[in-house]
Amino acid sequence: MSVSTATPPAASPQGSSRAVSGFLYRHPRVRLAALLSAPLFWLVVLYLGSLAIMVVAAFWSTDSFTGALVREPTLKNFQTLFRGQVYWVVALRTVGIALAVTLIDMVLAVPLAFVAAKVVRSRRLRYALVIAVTMPLWAGYLVKGYAMQTMFINNGVIDWMLAPLGLKGPGLGLAAVVFSLAYLWLPYMVLPVYAGLERIPDSLLEASADLGAAASRTFRSVVLPLLVPSLIAGSIFTFSLTLGDYIMVKIVGGTTQMWANIIYDNVGVANNLPLAAAAALFPITVIVLYLLAVRRTGALENL
Image (cartoon, rainbow, N blue to C red; front, side, top):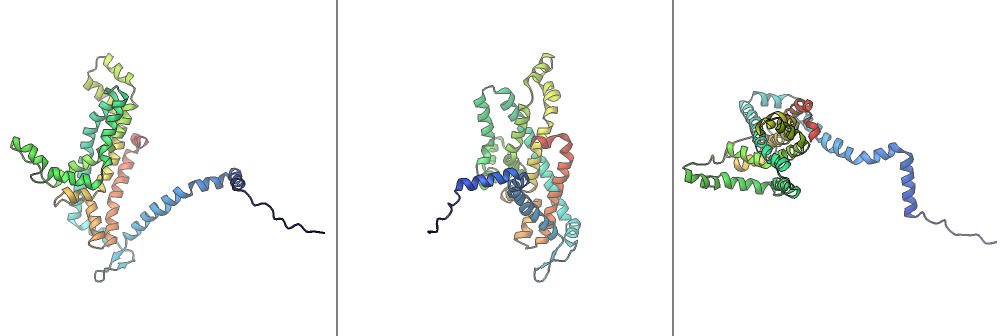
């Protein structure tokens, strides 16, 4: 009597896939966990984890002799920031620059977006205008920074343009920082404003005109109130990006300092990580307060 030694056929890849699919179909919670594991890992471990470490590090200090980290809770860093007059000056200057950049971008973005959304009838030309507005985003940050330095430097392009009028440009400094950052972040204001204008029905503008309202009255009474959430949505980008910038001010700012330079210098030059961590809480706090202030306007739905 012979004994069969044949082995059972191995499971095919298709059979394994069907088994896994069937298991996930019968267990929706496992399916949901598998789907969200990667983004949750990114959010909780990489983002919130690093943020939590930064908050904890803000309460540490460094040994003044060796420079080593002292992992004992202390308020020394916050006392340094609150008692230093220079920190108050830099903080107020940074918030002022962020507000100025946001205001300039609003003034520039509204007519640009209005022409693209409501005046231009050709869809191709409309899309071409929107793409042209986003073109500054295609170039590298440093390329744009040194291009702006060429514009504002003494005897640069702006001085050359103003020379026939007997005028001189502002040179490198605070004005150069404001205009350079406004140029950098303008697309982030134009795009939400354009999307907001696209959602305004043309019939509202036609009804306003039929009732005898001039174009300026229609803009003030019809367009602008409906556009406020989009403007605030754009301001979230321009305001927050300006608060965190430290490179452009080094390129075109001359001796001007912004708050992010304090963070950078304490990390890279002074090697005082706890003070840098404490300083980093200032822009985070400002942005959180700003988001809480604008959340009732419906602007967050326009992001």
